Image (cartoon, rainbow, N blue to C red; front, top):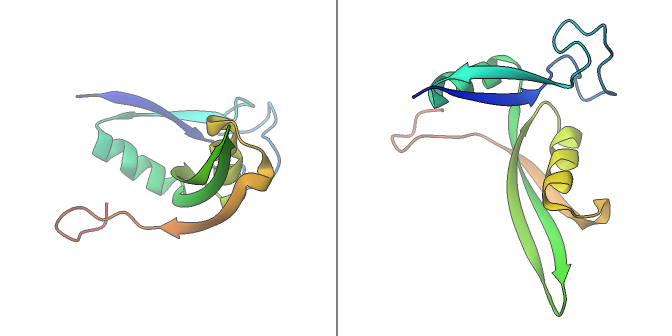
Length: 110
């Protein structure tokens, strides 16, 4: 089964957005990777992308609680921006983050 995923341009390095002169994305901010899920994961790893687990605080009406999300990004700042945009929370919602390593069920790195 083949899939296509868009990942953040690795040329950013956690800096400002890319310009139209960027060799990786030509200013589009994301680059496509395709193939099987394993192949996409390898391509993401080769681009210097890391997995971050973020803990966010949310409130909705009378309820409040912690929300844990995982993001793949080139830097913690990019992961936080992406997560906050995806879930629609304000920057003060970030409680903490950590870089995580994925393992399969046999204890091998993914």
